[in-house]
Image (cartoon, rainbow, N blue to C red):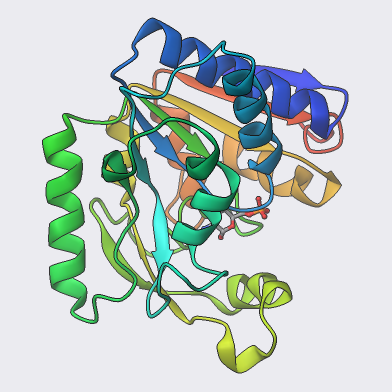
Length: 242
Ligand code: GLP
């Protein structure tokens, strides 16, 4: 695993954007696995700046997002589809039909997951997967569990994740309790993985995930077995790393 320590969030975002830019430049028809959450927002801003300068071309890129809340429509401003449009897709020349996010409005979980697995299969696999890290070690919405779920599945979000997400919703009742997420197997098959972490509140889970035992109770710990992981974090998030 490569660890890149930056002074602050802004530099973390620039460094992560460097890596994604390199991927897009070297393989213009690449498949990017993309993530939501507050951590990658600066990375997306930086990618948009580079696109505006004429340094990046997304016209050949396919994107496949990690997850989506079950029950939220693309127009809901808390849906991950909305997030991606707002922070990246509407600002660059990626073809909208080449941007994939699980269908939150598909009530039939099996159908939603099977069709997402098929999209992933048809894409030929993810070249570079961007990941944030949940406070309990979740990646995408793969929550701590007794076993690693390999493919796309519907998850019951843990109370700590529901609590963490509550800040974005008007009331607790509106916070989704379930989500569709790409599985750990799909994430592990990505050619390269880029994890972004920021802030002192992530320091303990960064240590547990990357330097503790590999266990489905800390889903991100499986990344220790991936052959090409780059962890980019600011000093605060990496402060407990031995
Ligand atoms: C959500 C997303 C994850 C993300 C996590 C951390 O749970 N499903 O993909 O990594 O939030 O978010 P943040 O970066 O805001 O801490």
